[in-house]
Amino acid sequence: MDSHVNQQQDLQVFTVGFFLAQLLGVLCVALAGAWSGHYLGGFAWQSVPSLQFNYHPLFMVIGLVFLYGDAILVYRVMRNERKKILKLIHAGLHTLAFIFVVVALKAVFDSHNLAANPIPNMYSLHSWLGLAAVVLFSLQFVCGFVSYLFPGVSQYWRAWYLPVHVYFGVVIYVLGIGACLMGITEKLIFSLKSDYKDLPGTAVLGNILGVVLVCFGILIVYLVTTPQFKRQSLPEEENLQLTPHSPIN
Image 1 (tube, one colour):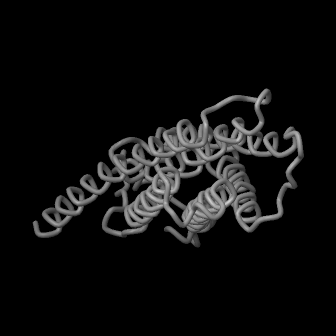
Image 2: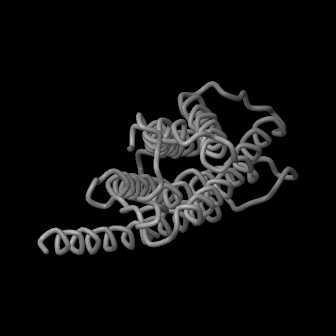
């Protein structure tokens, strides 16, 4: 009886945390859109490379932060759905996130290469860690697809790889948010120079965006790593036999 009550209480805490996370996630996207669309001058494609850049911060926040965050929460949010459905939703959100990330990278490289005075690529710490996050995210996406959606993979391999997949999923997510924070600071310093210290509107909004990104990331990591919020296997899933030495047997 006490166990059931505790589970209900844990579920209530998780539900509140999840809805708060969604509010923060939507706020992140809205702030990134306002910052890029208003304070940084709006959007264009290759005809105006400086404005093409503005897709980069917006789409990175949408893809690598908001959609990625929701993707890693799927199994804990939709706890009564069959695992096969959850795998497809999890993969679908990651696919959508990947598309936004690719377009964001295209935008930033074009904005450098097509400028009247081309700007060097890949020289800042932000670019190094940002590209590292994207590469790791891509590898994680491929390995996850092969392991859990590709037919013929043994149950033993899937069980062995699961904790690795979960661990690196969280690591990549934190790395992505860290790269976003460095990117915001870098853009503010480059665009405002000495005026940054006076905190004009664009600096205030950029800083607020960074704070909200941190809050959103902290909440997502808390929700996805707290053992009490873990999805319980459905009765039909408990009957599935893993190999004898499976790490999650």
